[in-house]
Length: 218
Image 1 (cartoon, one colour):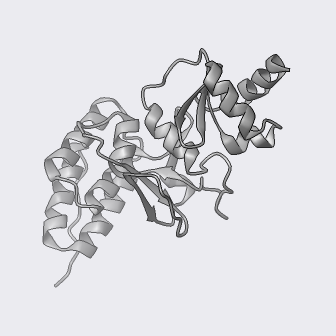
Image 2: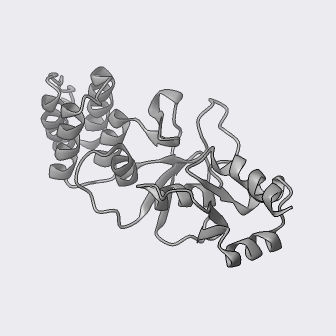
């Protein structure tokens, strides 16, 4: 019975970084009390509220991000009407997952399609309407594309030098695959935010070798 239970949990965990949630376990017929006993015996390890790692599964580099995404229901919530994942890594969290820039992760930032509450500490949920072109899976985690991440960092007021460093890394690593989209998004942001954002757009777009057309605001 124990081997059978572990096999069921293992089949779930192998889909997502060796991790699984209480809800996923219950859907597979494994009760919460069983999980408590298995954690006490060392067969599984509790990482966060309602999130476990199977014994023997190696820790992942961004495991805290993955565990939080799972705890928030990222693996079980329904996709939006446009097919976008219901929970997408954004801002500094996306930059860390994309491995661009030099950021200190003092909290986790996700985009959701509608208002969603959470009691998890240091988690920020922002409501945004994303298109499929805005999101890419990074090691299985729905994440803003590099281009959209750069724009998002600008939009939330991240230090200009940090954003520029992140974009330099992305260019150097060949991760900017849609410079025209970056140009369009930054230009649109600049037109909404005024001269400071316009100058920042010019600086950032210059890093990918594309000119930015100033909008005529009279």
